[in-house]
Amino acid sequence: MADEIEKKLVNDQWLGGQLPSSADRDAFEGLAVPNPATHPNTFAWWCLVAKFTPAVRASWTGGAAAPAKGGAKKAEAPAKPAKKDDDEFDPFADEGEDDKAAAEALKAKAAEEKGKKAKAAPIAKSIIVWEVKPWGEETDLDALAAKILGITMDGLSWKTEYKKEPIAYGVFKIVIGAVVEDLKVSTDLVEEKIIEFEDEVQSVDIQSFNKL
Image (cartoon, rainbow, N blue to C red; front, top):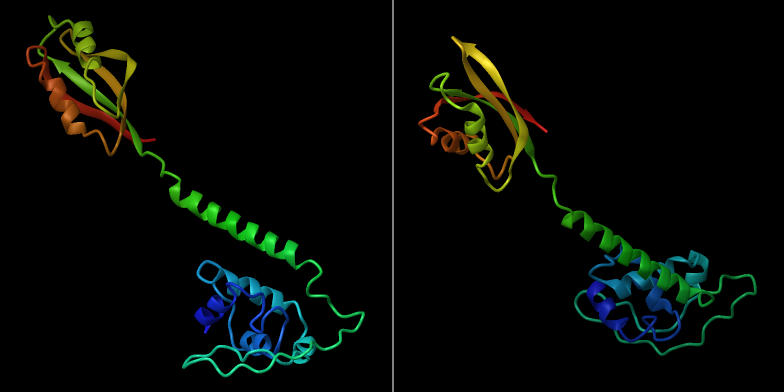
């Protein structure tokens, strides 16, 4: 039924033509609120008809019968609109502004929903601190740290500062950290890159791993 009404209202304001009729009343009473996205003309028409009281709608006569499943009924001869009392609601007074406001509201709502869907999800990041143990005290830890800081990957950002902490017998280890994007950087791959400095590095361990 809504599809047939939508087609009819492409060129006409009312189902009976340019004036409200019994066809509009019957269709309104048999139709739920239309979907403005799929039936914009029907939705605007439904909002306009809803402004009238049941008593005013009951006074509408003439016009084509309301579209229904199984084919449309034979159109009735158009009749003159019933005389309107001075204190009755005038359906034509501000309908242009109301329709425009309704259309703008629907457009704004659609844009808002589209914006919510398009909004990117926050990037998951972690801060990781590694312990890098050298082979012995003769290893130049500053030179080794420079090599580690030179490792580059998409989503890997090294901290510029690092620490030297004692292990035993005058041997120190490097404590160095970085911020990584979880979906881009594998901790195992970072460790493999550090271990590639095999002449200086004995082992690599994660000291801490925290989500940001």
